[in-house]
Amino acid sequence: MATPKYFPTAGHLLVCQGPNCQARGSAPLYQALWRALDQGHLAYYKSGGNVRLTESGCLGACSYGPALCVYREHGGKLEQGWYAGVDFPLALALAQAVHQGAELPEDRRYGPDGG
Image 1 (tube, rainbow, N blue to C red):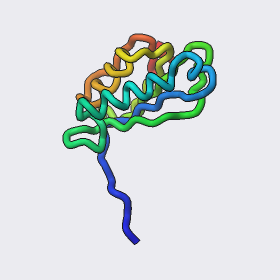
Image 2: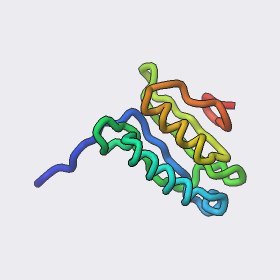
Image 3: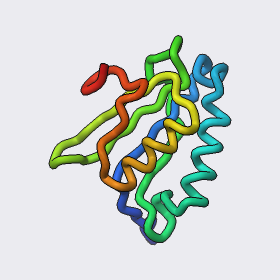
Image 4: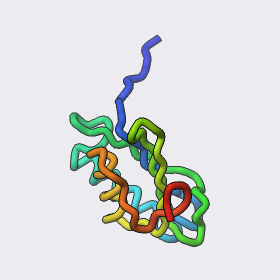
């Protein structure tokens, strides 16, 4: 049996698609970010890319959506960043930080390791 191809990643962005986040624009945000990652060769399946993007269920910030969560290994440990009220510029900045191994932005961050 053939095995699927494995693509190494620098991190994973999850964009909430729960009903409250969708009402606040998470579906078009996800699509715009997907296109930007693809066109900018940041997506994990592109040569030189290493960012994985996934739609998720509720991330718990229902009144503050769209919500986005980042998971990555950074500094030898698993780092998570939780964000509320995410717009395209912030989402792209998060993807670029993951791709470059840079510090995650503090803007609109909440939860563990955030405000």
